[in-house]
Each structure stands twice: as C-alpha cells, then as structure tokens.
Image (tube, rainbow, N blue to C red; front, side, top):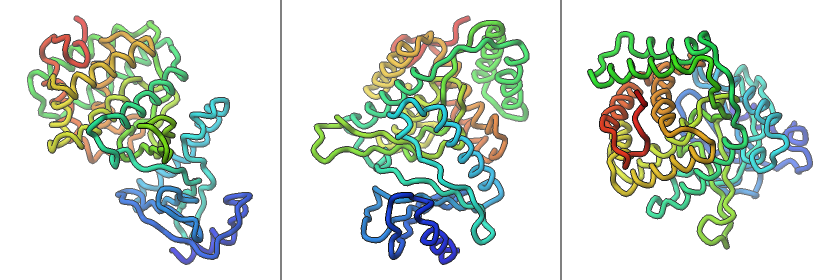
Length: 344
C-alpha cells in the first residue's frame, strides 16, 4: 500500500499541493487510531511532525470508510459555510481528495500546524482557556434559532431518550432524570431552539495549538481542529464545550471517564473554573443556564446511540456510565455547580 500511495502522491504532487515543488521522497508518520489509519506526510527535509504537508487517512474497517466519506463531505460543507470567516476557515483541514488507491478508499487532507491539546501542561489551564474562547467565538458566530415542531422534538429528543433507556439497567435517579428530561423537551415544541455549528467530538486529541516561539503565554496561539466527521451545521450547543472540559480533566485526575465527570462537578477549583467558563459561554450565546443540563444529557444519549449517524455503537456502555456520573453530580440544586438543574 505504501509504495502505491507514495508513487501516487509524488506523481500528482502539483495537483495535490499546487505551488509547491514535489519532494524527492516522503516520510510517513503514523498516528494511533482504530477505525482509520492516519498518517502525517512530511515531504523531503521540510520536516517536523508538527508541520506535515499532508494528512492521509486509510480505513481499517467498513465503518472506517463511512467515516471518511462523512468527513470529506463535512469538510467541503464547512469550507463553504466558513468561506467569509478566515479565522475559522483556516482552523479546519482543507479536503484535497477522496480517492481509491490500491483498492482502498483514501482521504487526503492538507496538513495544518500544531500540537495536540493534551500535550500542553494542565497546571495553568492557559491552553484550555484559549481553546474555550475560540469555540465560544465560533459557536456565537454560527448560532441560529430554529422553530421546532412536535415531530422535530420526537426525532431529535424523545426517540433517542427511549432508545437509550431501552434495555439499559439505569439507576432510579437516572430513570427519574430521563422522565424529567422527556417532560422538558416536550415543552420545546413550537419554541425557538438555539442551535449552532458543532464538532461532535471536540476532544483534546482533535484540537491543535500552534504557539509562536516568542509568544507570552498563549497570546497569538493558533487553534486548529481536526476530525470533523460528526459535525452538524445545526447542532445542540454546550456539548462541545462540556466534552473538552471533561476530556482535559484527564491530565488533572487519574480517574476514568465517568470519574472525570464527577471531578468536573465536585466543587473543587477545577469545577469552579468549569462553572465559570460554561456560564460565560451561555452568556455569550444568549442561552438560559438550565439549557446546560439538557444539552449535556444529550452528549451522552447521542454518544451511546451514535445519533444521528448510526455507524458505531460499541461505546454505549461507557456513555451510559457517563450519564450516571453526570446525574449523580447534579442531584442537589447547588448554585456552586457548573449548571442548574432542569427546571420543574
């Protein structure tokens, strides 16, 4: 596969990367992955793993092929959506080609600079703050309000809740929470629903920071975001922010995913920071505070179902555990927590 891929890239270099001379040789740097094998392509001696010329993705499974097609389509759509906003357009990979090489579907993207967010020190939270500001600006700029019908509520909320609960052994507290959630979302019918451009997997491994060598802190840092497979033009807000906040907690606590959720709710220094950033986000987007609980619940419900894509459901048990941890952290109406309970 590699000789075929290397030959294809060298022979078509001027079309793949117009205006750049074809390298004499290519260096392949593989990144970890399950459904898809990802390679950074560094041409000639221009190297350094932080500034690849290209990114090549090759599926390992049939589901991987579906993911690559979705990512290519989403990146083309995003390029059109963000064409007038250079700051955000330059933050996403440029799709070059989705083609067949050696009998394999191959996605070719233009490389972008940066190191993954999880490689930055967690002590001062400066890198995370920079990313949260970027996300808030992106989603404030793409926020819309959509009138939802009873049928929309059924498809977006009620059916996923029922499918999530079906066959699951949930705690009494979570069962009660889902009943309250059903009641809340039914009341959304006929009301304007705030939606925004969402990433869908806004995790520390999908966020890149390129910090100028002479920068003071993170001033002038460039934020870029990769793997837009699960992005939606009109998705629920807050989910991306909550995802990165709980994912970043991995560098602060040795606990597993559900433990990191509890850590982010526990009322300590990090939880207070989480609360403040989420409240600032809601203020910037004009969202009611109770909306946080609703959207975060669907982060786990949609994740368990892989809704609306329906490609990968092997992580359902983990998402159910995460919802249990989330519900366990909001059982009391405590204003010092990151968000209020769903209102009765």
